[in-house]
Image (cartoon, rainbow, N blue to C red; front, side, top):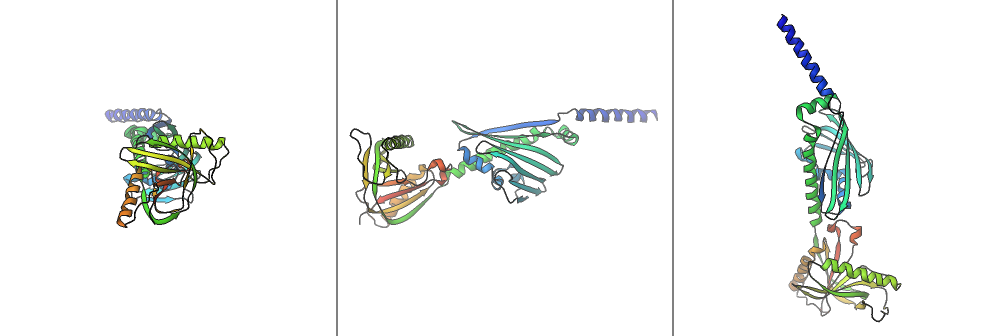
Length: 339
């Protein structure tokens, strides 16, 4: 009988000791994971800021793709919310509390099953020369039950940190794939109205063409500003020579009428006449322009259309500054053809 009492007393001491051990565990937890993604900050921010985009990169939905997802009337920005219900995921919801465009997103996550808990989710987006540093953080309080679970299963960070890493990896992957999207559309034979443009000519290759275009357009815009000239259309490029080794190009900005260019200026006035052309539209990154030209010239050959002497040119319909995703950029290609 005495032995049983000692055993029960020992068990009681162990239970009390274990309870004390659980109780003295940290009352709060906080951790984060970061990844630098080579993409514009606004493109990444917009994906994270819309809960309808979360199934694409959520590491938890990946574990149970058939889980029931319910999206609120608002899914983007402050007030955006969604909930889930599944055998693996349990039951819970998430809501966006605050946002600062292209800088941060604050969210609240509520777990209902298999146990009740509430935590804070914070996203931070920081531009850098390498791309955008994305930091995904989580913090919250730990009640006794949560502490008990972490004693047996490990800290919340050890359980959830790998999920954050997986989510950031997937976010990077879908962003990169999204930016690679492109489409080439042969619009067919049409008539180009023509007009004047101020241009600057240079040679370039595949490695420096973007930088040289930027320099030329910047120089032309500065010249136009100093001389009170107004832009009448989107920037264009006339290709004087095209070869495997590079191009000789004239980057230009349209103006409404013929203007006098001061003697000694490092720009010139050009004119594209009214003419018949084959028009091709590229929707996507400028790196796909070669494919668009190949498709255009293939169309010429298949339809027995003969290029005219006037050089081909392209017009940049969208301003990349307003379209962070290169997949949304539009370029119109015009190849003059003989009547």
